[in-house]
Image 1 (cartoon, rainbow, N blue to C red):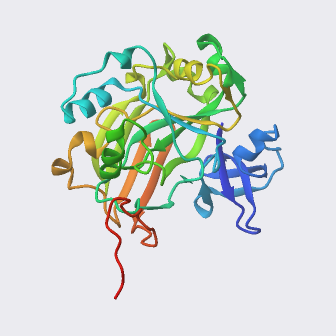
Image 2: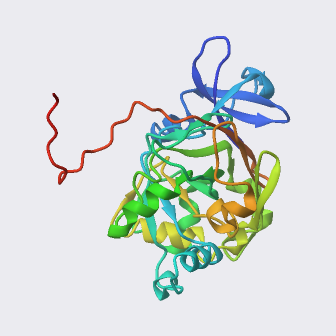
Image 3: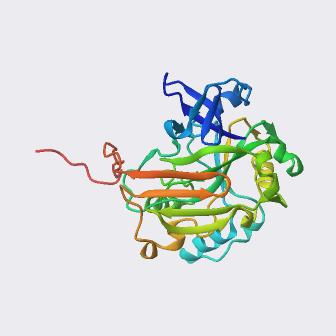
Length: 310
């Protein structure tokens, strides 16, 4: 089943529905995340209202996840990113699946306009696959991890490379280089629809990213060094995962401008650019870049001399 969160056109109500052959059949009020947390049904009634898909405004499948963890699962991306910084591949990568927490209050859906991070001159996309927890748990073993998963979605972990580079000089983060936007969508595909593509806990699904319709990235979910069950087991070690939690795979190899290099891709992203992230069987997640909000304030330098107005 393909589960979408959308706005009912006649009432403005946020609702969950099942995507079926160019239509969406209403399941009930509330986003998919709301219904997961309330343990409400996720199947539509046979006589439920049906809406044309192309007439609906889709939101992120889980607009406000309880938490967002983004992993570092693809060896090719990690190796390339470290090489750009003059670093050898770290043996720690092979010891445990590392992740960081992102901002659950900055989730964007399909066709949403993405504001540039304030102050950045190096905006980037990251082509990832995301997973939504359907059943909570703690200390989940690898062999039982899929039982806690509702389904998969496309994820774009927008990144401000110059901000990220500066703040991570202190070996903490990323923070402001990442927390302004994460896109997911266009809907969530439940695991039962993807069983034929699962082998050794990894799905054989082609991943593609385009900027202004030009293909820049191509990879496959199955290329991940760490599997989603391993990530779930690690994330839940001594911590509780909750229904609606979002887990990202990290960037697939070639899946960002940083890795491809801006001189080979037409530069960093700028206002007006359109980014498409496509994963086989999951759909296309499309977003356009907007100008940054200029109302922000930079912190003053605490060591700067005081200035007195005339």
